[in-house]
Picture 1 (tube, rainbow, N blue to C red):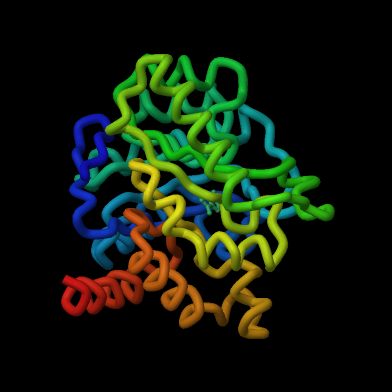
Picture 2 (cartoon, protein in one colour; picture 1 turned 120 degrees about the vertical axis):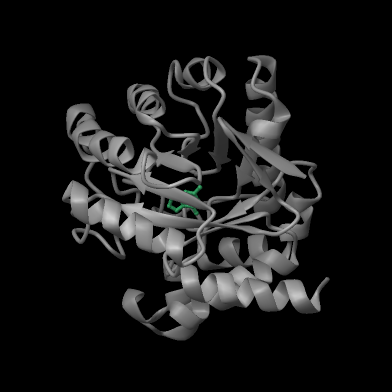
Length: 274
Ligand code: 9MG
């Protein structure tokens, strides 16, 4: 299986590691550390040296109850970093946004992938991606970051997430976005209780059997805090364990903060699970 992202083609025979670079003052885990362009670029280069296959840059936090950011503020945060980084590294840069205008500017600045927690449901988002050649990660979320943890409810979380993702993939393909450009993501923690998250991990095979590559983002998330009792800055071992379980269940991309530790753990998986 391959993923086409602009000038890059990723071979998904080995699970790929997407390193997270938040250029926000308020992200739940690393917010505020990388707000200056040069610091952000230096951190991205470190993630590449640690073995990242993709760098995901976000300028608006999507943690529960995060304050929305204006379009101009988001553009000002991400575009200079993408422009500077595009000539520094030779792996895909992903833009984490749901705003079509940010997608367009990020692609023009050198992004090869869009990571959209709203699965291209904003007006014009499908068209912006269809007019380009970038990869696109379609993520499931119930509600919005402001409301999503207010009593999320599903009859059958795995089936409803699968149905939603397949419907969004169909919309993309009808708009001319080739299947080889698509990744699906159940959206751990986005409008899900602990039980919903655990059901999705346990039954991840249902999603990985859908004939699209699946991206999993569990790194440092609160469900891992609930399982271990640890605060967000002490969830390394839990995050690596979750990445290994996801890889063994067929995930093709892991979105993580701790790139080096995850890459090493995945090498062990590859050596033993060959
Ligand atoms: C931006 N963001 C935060 N968590 C995420 C997750 O689990 N998946 C994707 N695709 N993006 C995420």
